[in-house]
Structure formats: structure tokens, C-alpha cells
Length: 205
Length: 169
Image 1 (cartoon, rainbow over the protein chains, first blue to last red):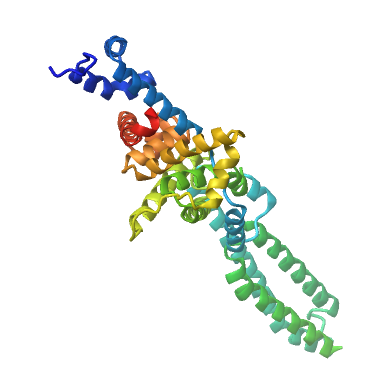
Image 2 (image 1 turned 30 degrees about the vertical axis):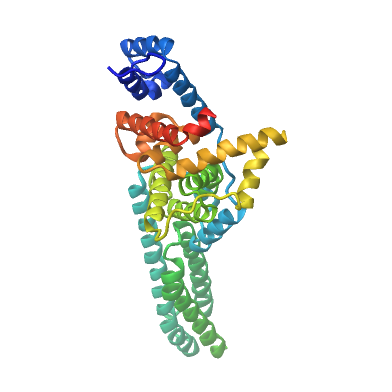
């Protein structure tokens, strides 16, 4: 077996060199550890290699962690805020659990419920819009089985309160659909309907 | 934990890994931004305690993707990169003589890490620089524990071979 100048066994040195990293980590079994230690006692070259192992470990472990530039984080947060819809403080501060599929279903159900309620409000508003001129005409005819002016005003006020309530539900329900669907398809048409009711009433006065 | 809190807690780890992996500050910033935006996209789809492991994995994969997409030789951190040298110099010992020596050895080691082939580069950075456990290394690289240890040991052996003169000097 080839030997070094100091008499150490090259084959043994190669084996120990393969084990040095594990030896430094304390991962060798008892027999392997004993073999390495016996070899190290006799081999200055391998002792030098063990020193190199430890020096390298020291240098690597001394590498500093680097601070992420503030502008990187600022860009990310600005982008996420732009993407995000308004969330309640409670929603934002609670980390959603791994059962996210259930949570997402609940969000969609709430949004769907909000749409249905708002749609009902729109339908009620449109119905009132149709009824307002008739009611006003009946009032003018002073028939006993028509809606009185007070009843019409009350209905108008009730509808406004209901729509405001529906808007609040939609806002808490989250909003994924609020901007795109609810505002364009429900809220604005309902407001127009209310406006027409108010116009019809004022004409009848 | 909110998303903003997760960003504050993990941004340093993400940026550091990407920097030591790629050896380039600008690319490390790009990777950090990509990873944090990806975290936003997936926010709420996993448990809070899984966030660090998920970030390790995504950061490593994104860094690897960027490395593969390069059309030119990997640009190592050079002595002319004043901003980077300043970063390291601030963290060295105050003695000018020791700063020069430590900076030199540390610079050699840092450059050697960037030249390590995969999968050893990821394993060494996670284990030795980011000081993660072997289990965390295995989870990040999606490999068995024994393989993670082998990769780390092999990576250190390759570094030792390349840095013979520096380490024995």
C-alpha cells in the first residue's frame, strides 16, 4: 500500500478523508469514529485536513445574513395592497388555517347571499318604481284601497335602509365581487330606481 | 400572523439565501420580490408553521430557475462591487489587518460557494450559512434526510478541495 513521506497510508487517508465531514458532525458510528481517531493520532496530513474542515465550517457559519433592501419590501407591499380588496381588521389579523378550501367556500357563500339579497332589493326598488306613478294617480283619485302618500314615503325609506344594510353585508362578506358585480349590477341600478321614485313623488306634489 | 408580519420575519432569510446562491445582489433582490409575491398569492393556503419550509423551498427553486435561465457565465461577486464589500466590511472585526485577512478568506469562500454545483450548493448554503437543521434542508430540497446529509458533506468536501491553499495558508 502506498505511503506518504510521513509513513501514513494513502489508502487509509482516502478513507478517513471521506469520513472527516461526518466525523466533524458527530455522525460516525462508534467503530468508524475509533478508526478515524486512531488514524489521526498517526497522520499529520489528515490532522491538517481536519483543521481545514473546521476552518471551513467556521468561515461558512460566520457568513453574515444580509438585510433585504427596504425598497424591495416596499414594492411588494405596494403591489399586494393594490391587488387586495378591502378586508376587515379581523380578517387581516387572523392567519387563515390550512382548511382554506372550507373558508373559501364560506366566502363565496356569503358573497352569493349578498348578491341575492341585493338583487331582492333591486327588484323591490323596481317594483316600487312601477307602483309609484300608479299610487300617486290613485291618491289623486282618492280611492280608499290605494297606497297613501305616507305609505309610499315609508316604503321608500324602508327600501333605502334595506339597501344600506345590504351594502354593509356585502362589504363584510368580502368583497371579491363587490366592485365588479354588486356595484355595477345591483347598487347603481337600485340607486337609479330610488332616484326615479323620488322624482315621481315630487312630480305628484 | 398577517402577511406583512411574515414578510418582516422572513425577508432576510430569503434575500440572504438568494444572494449566496447567485452571488449577485440585483438578482437576489429579484428573487426576493418574486418569492414574496408568490407568498401573497398562496397566503392562507397552508398552516403558519409551514411558512418557513415553504419559503425555503420556493426561494431555492426560484434561485435555481434564475440560474438556469442565465445565458452567460455566472457573475461572481467581484472586489469592485463596493456596495457588497461595504456590507461585509461593516460586519468584520474592527482591526484593519484582521478585516483584510478575514475579508480575503471570506471572499474566497463566498465565491467558491457560488461555484458549487447543484445540489450541493443549496445544501451547503441552507445547512452551513443559514444554519438550518438537516431535517429542514431535506424538507426544502424535498429529499430524504440521509441524502441531505450526503449532499452537505459532499459540498463541504468540494469546497475544501477548491480552497486548499486558502484554508491551509
